[in-house]
Amino acid sequence: MFEIVVKKTLGPKITLYEVKAPFIAKSALPGQFLIVRIDEEGERIPLTICDYDKEKGTITLVVQAVGAESTRMESLQEGDCFADVVGPLGRPSELTELSPEELKQKKLLFVAGGLGTAPVYAQLKWLHEQGCPADCIQGARTKDLLIMIDEMEEVTDTLYLATDDGSVGIHGNVTVALQQLHDEGKHYDLVIVIGPMIMMKFVCELTKKLGIPSIASMNTIMVDGTGMCGACRLLVDGEVKFACVDGPEFNGHLIDFDQAMQRAKLYKDQETRILLRDQEKETHHGGCGLCSE
Image (cartoon, rainbow, N blue to C red; front, side, top):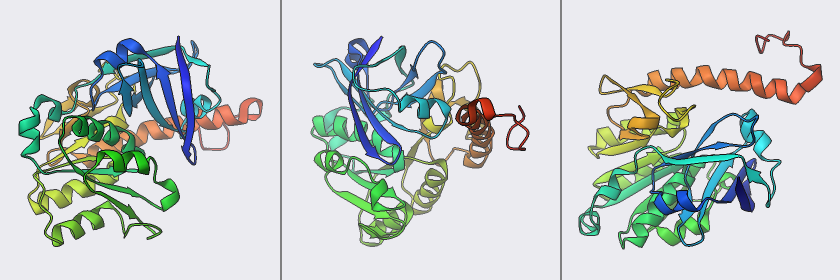
């Protein structure tokens, strides 16, 4: 059993959990993910690692309640336990393969959209600990949806906030912010983008136009997390890859985002039906046309 030692609300339906998992914390690296199961009846939920503390033996997860299982997770409190936490899984960020000297020679820019802030934080913190500065654009629809701003500022060289409605920072989405930085003469050797798939698609289209190598994390399409279900299958430079075992990070200029988004929609529709069933309970009959049960 994996005890929840800290539970903190970060935003609307967004919750941070710090969980006792000493063996995972000891070997975790930025870019990797976990499989979490609430209880013996629960489904397997893949979640990227936001933070880990080797001395305390804890790992930190940030979860948005959008589906049936993540909504059910909200009922857990400090002192409660997850039945299973498996990991670390997936390949670490390729940045972890470089020496501090090599990293210091690169000008890095991270682009974090929405909940993608959590796994971006893990990478920025690791770089900060290596003495390697990096910039970050953090975006959301409005300022109330921006999370972990104080924590992000502590581990970035410069943090640029961007909101679609202009409520804080740059008025516009993250691609507007990226174009603005480019127009101001900011130069970057590599862009790492994590967030909603549609956001990553347009960021990578822009960086390709600007000639900036880019990495995108495809953690959002994972289901089983072990390569057995095939749900996270995607095309990278025309080759079939699996986000959970070959990634989750890939060359953003080579990903077929349209195919990946079409596949993800199939599972989103199924999750919506399950959530509706759980919410309606005994009144659920499946005859409304929103589900097939």
